[in-house]
Image 1 (cartoon, rainbow, N blue to C red):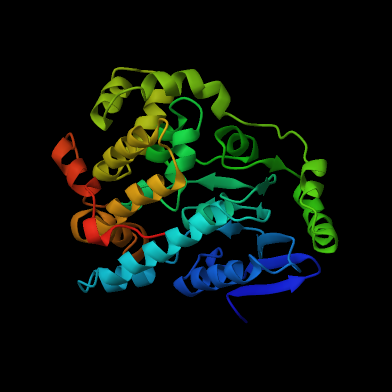
Image 2: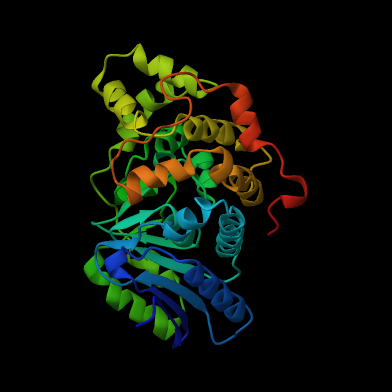
Length: 343
């Protein structure tokens, strides 16, 4: 059975991630297959809408399949990862700029690379099991796959909070933060997808959407804005350490699990993105500057070792327990010249 099912059904181009036992983690081959389908359907008048969903009920896509990245990186082969990220980011950009409606149905875990596939289309549907997060700082990366664009656009300083803590968003939180558009109960999804296949009319999604309950981020916004107003990671941490509230203690605990270098670079990327020049291209370019260097100069290989390979949950991060020098952040985010991302 294939890891991905790509077909045309009625008026819909259909992409179904089909690795439920692996939480539909996206492999390099799946990434290239999705891109090829989108390229084919762009000018195919038979396809009026693209529908992306996933098999199983535990996850839409819990991230990228990083075992191969670790295997090549630990052998000193950084080119494989650099090529993978460049191709993945090109796909993310194509979904974001696609000329036809792209509907995604985000049950269960949608994290990391899953956000890149599922959260850039025009109609992003969440339900009661949805759990959306950007957990990359926990493995020595920065939020990527275009995720920094949404983090930079999120209300107030929510982007810094979500990016450095890996906090999970339910349906209401994801809509509030700008990672999703519509809440529809999951039992209604099969009939809705069937209607999309029959009509090709994405307005059917909007017509069925209702208001979700149970969000927490909106109520936390004032505390998040106060705590994450600093110019650099060290400013944010200092503010949190001088606050004895439950929010501050919980936030420090979450951040304490993550790579200091990754968190510092995440804060810097979001600050650079905000403003009139914000674009998907700029977000992906900054993300790629980091991921291009992540194996050789960052904490990525150590993060994967601790979380996935040896599972000791005890990563030995650079700059652990001390401030991240500004020069270390600058080195990770300086332009790549001839190696810059090409979309």
